[in-house]
Length: 536
Image 1 (cartoon, rainbow, N blue to C red):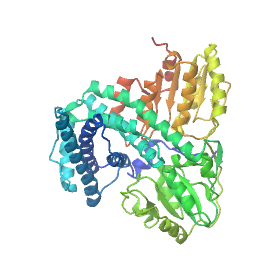
Image 2: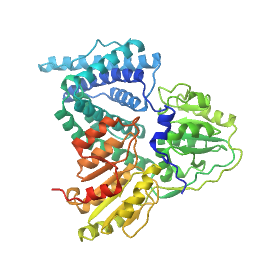
Image 3: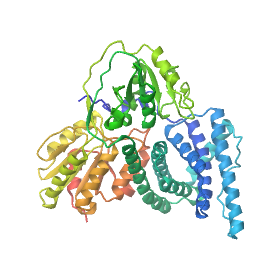
Image 4: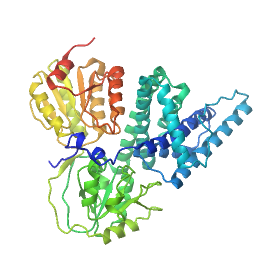
């Protein structure tokens, strides 16, 4: 199988070696200001909800602002002014509306503390200064544990924001998750934040995160059909080409429709977009040719070698304008520097750029990859495994990985399977290994597959009644949310791989270990011994 996703240790990841995914101190200060505006707005929007008042426009503004925090959007003065002006106006309107209702209902007016005078005419220089001052104040007043919990809550909010943004694009409902997010943001207000309250909010929010992941999956299925297993070509064919990178399936569909009847081949890029091939309605488009490149972690190499036009469907990359000026496009309201913004869903500039580019001069042949799954077959196999657990034929169940893993993990799991006792069983979603007590799923999929497997297991035996360990072998923006969900639903042992510091601050790992009992991979022998120790 052609499968180079994350095949290098994180020390050589382009996020670190090229600085693509880093967030500089200036951007951090700007994000602090945006977060302060959102947190204050959350207070008034929750109060208004109690009066039965909602506002869809404000909801979209907040979700997009949070989404931009995840993607590390770098604002110019005009873009920052537009964002802050919207948030400022929304806060002002919400506050006045809330106060008027309180007066009308003769209810005491409550307020939230502000840390500086708000202004819709903030300039970037002032925002950077104020954001830095607030960040320093927060750091000096929080204990190290409070700071770590604050960062964990922010991780969860950002993870959910990505999914809510996808739900919005797919036309799915996410009201419950939106208000859970407002509650989470409100709990992050400086003078309200405490360790106890943070842990309580995190516990509640985990289920909101699971629900939005589930709802996005089924919204995709509703639009594009049930996930099915399929071989995806990684080869290319001669001719003009467009690359669609990111996670927005609607934009991929729009590009496929816009290029119908042309000689342009459309290729997907990145792990999330690769999964689109498992959906029947996507595969029905004859110009969906296959998948190109390795992963979002290798976008610099992939984009620089692709001889056509590229559509970025989320602003994850900010420092690439020098690579491909004139051939990078996006529909994001705030495009990265050097990227052309497509307006009014008019894909003609993208198509023209593809025709003007040289295209592929010859075919390249590479092995295909399996994606998608048959839910019926997986359920049948999981049922067989659980029957053995019930009959005490399996002492301990291991679930290995999500998606893929660096080479360093290959050595770890080679040794792990060699040492794993014969009366234990492993379901491996990532490490290719066969055996009498190993069920290897020989295809690529997303996080939803592990949720489906866990749901099937839980239908047979409650999690707190089964000796089970899960090893997550992929580190991304959703890692912390998934780790905490697994612990919250009762999985006894949860292990995480080493994450690059650009994704997870190493200081957080200690808090995850101490509060939630999450462990890092260490030595296969030791980890097996630890998991097999009976705990009360």
